Length: 257
Ligand code: NAP
Image (cartoon, rainbow, N blue to C red; front, top):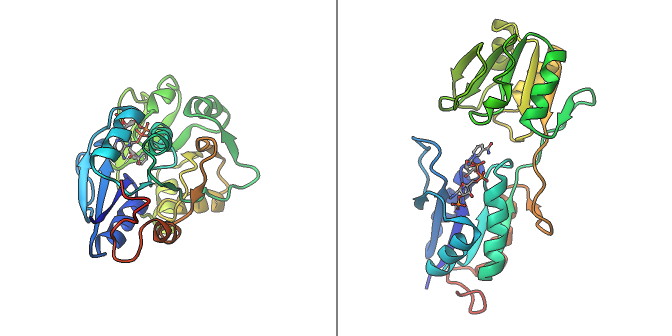
């Protein structure tokens, strides 16, 4: 029976891992998406869409689909699915790894905060025109800041309620340093609010803010579930999988569900 890897996706790293694994003969690879994005980028291998129904539902899915290894390659801020994945893997007895791109190196004078709500509290001290680069969800935290002008950039339209003075730019990274400098200057941005998502595709906005000496507020990423470690990139996950799935793809007798 071919080994079966389930990747919890929604990130560039998950897509790249699916491509690397789908090329292997005799290995079944499925990527799971939450279904938040209407037109997701193409993914190699099988794709399933939608929630599992909590940790118990995911554990059932692992058993029913004879999953040999579970890779949680979700976004660093997707806290609930990461907790569910750890619990489901434990309950179903399936080897589990977390692929988490490292966070960014933050400057000493940038302000780390615990949540979008805390970031909104910091805004009045920063300036009038704010580049809000925190994704399309959770912008309600800034909705009461009626005296400020926000520029929001996201791949798909942000979810209301939005701040009353809000300009939306729909765009998908990667963005170059020149793009980001242009955006900050064109929109006369005074401050940047972002999440510590990490990754190269959106890092140039930080370099641009640094070079213009703009204040930066960074929402810290949530902790991983206790006892769960992270692998930093696809290579590390492929190395881990090599210990779980023998060459040729068929699952080892002791890991075969
Ligand atoms: P979340 O709060 O951790 O998860 C909420 C629920 O959505 C989960 O309990 C699960 O439902 C379902 N879910 C999440 N990821 C799933 C997946 N890959 N496959 C199947 N079901 C999934 O997640 P989120 O922050 O809303 O993020 C949703 C997705 O968007 C993730 O796949 C993540 O990688 C991607 N994403 C998130 C962010 C971000 O900033 N949070 C940014 C970029 C991409 P059930 O309990 O019913 O299983």
